Image (tube, rainbow over all chains, first blue to last red; front, side, top):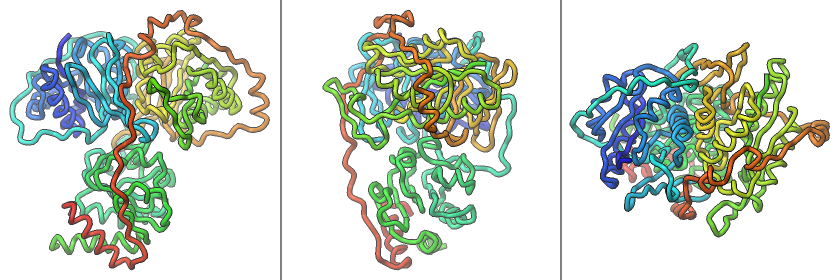
Length: 325
Length: 260
C-alpha cells in the first residue's frame, strides 16, 4: 500500500497527448493531498523517449509499458504490476484509457469511478464527482469501506489543467517483462490511415460544430473558415457524420468525442441529449439555429435564431476585421 | 459458433428518475428500455447469425426481475435464448461487481463471443467489457464498427484518430461494438409472438456459485451524495434581427469573454 497517485500517459507520434498532460497535473494535485509520489504509466509510440519529459508536466516517476502502437488492453498485466497497491490511478476517458482501466479493475478487483469531472482526496480518502443519467444528476462517490487500492478513476478531458513552465525529469523505468496471457493476444492486424488528416477535437480549445442544418458536405466550408479564424477545429453531430458530410472522427456526442473547449459554436445542431453529453461541459456555448424552439436553445449560453449560412461567413469576416487582419 | 450478447436495462432517456433513501436509482419506478447502445450489439449478432457465421445467439442480463422484459424485447428482435441473473444482493452493483457476475455467468455459458454495447446510457463508463475480459482471461476486441468471424479468429474494425485499424484475436473473445454497425431492427409482431415461447432461464447469485460476500456488498464504491447540477445562467437570445446586427452582437459577446 502506498499513497502514490498513478496516471496513464498516452503517446502518439512521439508526443505525450493532451490527456497525459492534464492527468499529470491532476495526479500531482491529488498526490499533494495524499502525500505520495506522482507516477506515470506511459505507452504508445514515443513513450520510451518521452517519458522523462513527463517530469515537467508533474510526474516524479514514469514506468514505460510499451513504446509501440498496440491495443492498450494488452498492457494491462504489466500495468497491474506497476500500480498494485497505489492509492489511485487516473485514466483518460478515451477508448484505450477505458479499456486499460477496465482490465485493471478486472485483474486487481478494485473500485472504478467515472467518467468524472472532479476528484480530490480528503483525509486520505478519494472523492469523485460524476454527471450520470445524461447529466441530470451529479453523483459524489468514494471507495467503499475496506475496498482494496488503487481506485481506478476515468477522467473527462478538461477536468485538470496542464502545468505551465514546469521543469525537471521523471525517473524512468521499464515495466518488467511479464506474460500478458490471453489479454495480450489482441493485436492490430491492419492499419489504414485516412486520406486526409483529421483534427484532434479533444485537444481543440475552440470548436465549430455542424449538424443536420448544415445540409451537405459543402455546407461545412464556412464552418471550416470560422474555425480557422478562431484557431480551432471543426466537429459535427451524429446526423452530419451519418450523412457522410464529415468523417466519423469528427463526431461529438455519446458515441463520438467528449469535448470541453473554451468555446463551442453549434451550427444547425438541434441539441439531442446524445449530442449534449459530448459537449455540455464546454465553457461557452453559442448556438446558431433557424428553429427558435430547438432544444439546444435551452442549454446554450448564447442562442442566435437565424440562418447559419448568412451568419457564419459574416461572423468570420467580423472576427478577422476586429483582429485587424 | 455461439454469441452471447450482454444487455442492460436502463431508464429511458426521457423517463423521470427517482432515487431511494440510500441514493440508489429506483429502477422499478422509472420507465425502462434496452440500453440503446446494446441494441447495436444485438443487431451485429443477428446479422452474423443471418450470414451463417453464427449458429446461436443468446442474451444475458443482470438486473431486477423486470429486466426480463428487456430480454423478451431482445428475443423479439431475434436470437434463441436468454438468461437473467437477478438477486436482491445485486442491487446497487458497481462496474466491478457487474463484471464479476457477468464473468461468472459467461464462464457457465462459454460463448465464442461475449458481445456488448460500447457503453451504457446511464453510467457511461465503458469499463465492463475490459473488466469481464480480464476476469475471464480472454482477449478483448473493443469499439468495433463491425465484428467479423473467420474460423477460429475474431476481428473488429475500429476507427482511429485518422483512419481505421483491424484488430484481431483468437476465439473466445469479449467484444464491444459501436453505433456504426448498422441501425438496429424493430421487433416484428411475429417476432414478439415468437419471443414468448423462447427459453429464458433465471439465475440467482447462488446458481452462479457466488456469495454476496464475494461481491463486497455489491460494490467497491459508495455514493455519498446526489445533487442536481449547478443552475446555469439563463440563455441569452439574439432573434428577430438581421444577420449583420446578429453578427455584431455575437462578436461583442465573444469579445466580452476574451474568446476573440
